[in-house]
Image (tube, rainbow, N blue to C red; front, top):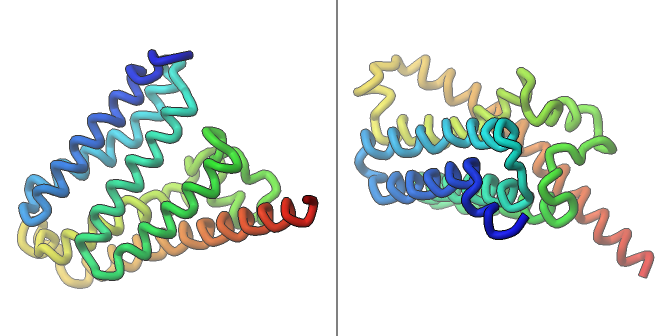
Length: 200
């Protein structure tokens, strides 16, 4: 496997996602363009893994690119939504560094020695009801909050306030479950680093 990995179908989807994210960032104050671009990017995120398996085009580069594009997209949204948005994206980037440094492309399968609650969330690569809830919180909460802030939920979708509140609470709970796993990953990496120090 050499340079051909750059033109694997799942990686091409990653490049398309990058274009969509930069389009969304450029159109942040245009809800129609932003929602369309960002939503398509999130949908393609769900397809790149399937495409990699379907065409036998899994790669370390593809696993890395997938998470980088995810983090860039969410960083852009959180950073534009709130002054403190950098904190959310900083945690996500820190977890990326911890997981990819220690486990590379197999990071989703590296939770065999983790606590049961982490294993439950991470089971089958998030393809369980609890894992789906976490992914919805991870990707959906910033998009939902954007819709709330820009008035899309009220004006375009005519969502009553109670539904907007319920959606925020459900997605925030999913995101907090994800945060609990992220904190555990960072702590596990710190323990790994300090154990290496003791061995030296």
